[in-house]
Image (cartoon, rainbow, N blue to C red; front, top):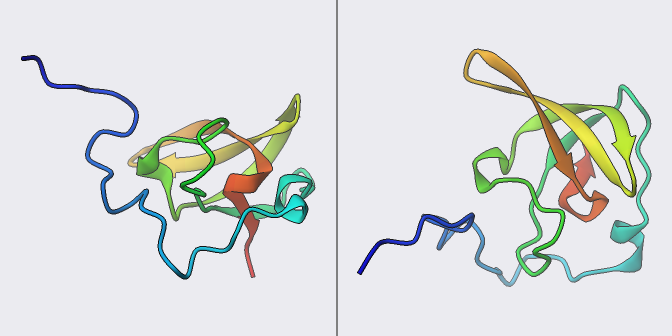
Length: 95
């Protein structure tokens, strides 16, 4: 049987819901960010849509725009700049 190479591959512990994971709230869904604001990509494991790749979990990026209800976040990955499309529930403000 062929191995699965889907978007959740090798993410058993990273996308597991811990007891300390905050519940899904309307406030997190409706969060707004300004262009130029620094955000942390904080994937909420129970929401599958609008989620960036688990490689970017915990990375800090800069909001560069909006696409529908999602935000475009510029993140440095290795030696390259990448644009990540993510819903606001998977983002949080940098403190």
